[in-house]
Picture 1 (cartoon, rainbow, N blue to C red):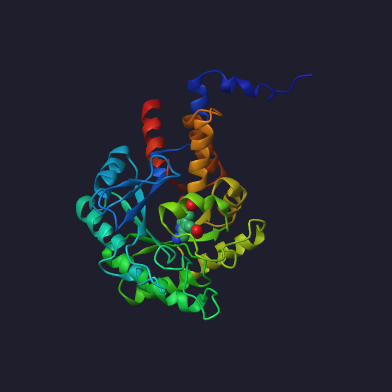
Picture 2: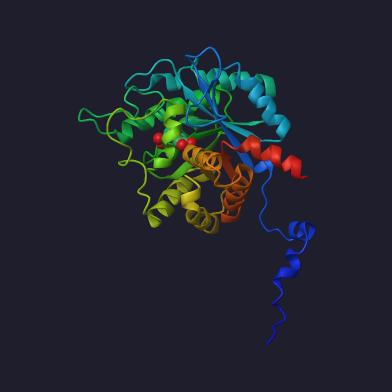
Length: 328
Ligand code: PBG
């Protein structure tokens, strides 16, 4: 017996036909490059567990951005690695802080060519490594932390960030940052909310890169439990109601079901963050001969787009652009 639609292979016959009917695509404009900018180094330094990823200086970040522009990337997100850490993370809102200086430098060189995003959190800036300030008993104090996120976001906006991206998973952080930005004349600065951010082992290499591993305990009391799907939807919805402009799910690969659900439920731009451990994992497996790196990176990132991500934060952004150019 034969059905009229039993020949799906017709559209797989040649590369040209396959390309014509491809549903999800990956392009340079979908990608945002995460960058680390460090204060206490005099030259760029490769991150041990992330081959090809560097801590940059304010100066060495400029050629990286130049390359990003030439590759067609549209955005960069900055993480600061400050020289000075203290219990409150005060370098996070220092007008001469490393991210603030980097933002001013990029804005001066590149104008509006690149969308400049700044990660807004305290873990890189606190001496204990937690994402907020601590109570006397060593717990992260949600409400006291919100005020400091507001200070950090305003100072990043003042330095030229188009978008601030709160990643600390404090309740109310989007609302607090929106209010602080508006009160200080930055009503045009957008907020990308790391809404559903899970307590994940896949952040391991980032903690080397940003020198922000917690000195005690872990982040399970503020980041999400990997088993929780409905709760993730509540997080996304709360951020939307608090005034987020874009929502994000993080990590990417183990959470693509949530990217899809977020895409179906909400009409805001939805992003996902392919985190440091995903980068290291693909590199390590490719180095061990399990597969070819390029094929694995293209397949995983296309699957993020298929899941519904409008944009992807990924350490592979430059490599992907290079490969897309070769394919064109
Ligand atoms: C916190 C922050 C982290 C990442 C981005 N922002 C680390 C954490 O929560 O421990 C992880 C990103 C990655 O692994 O690539 N400021």
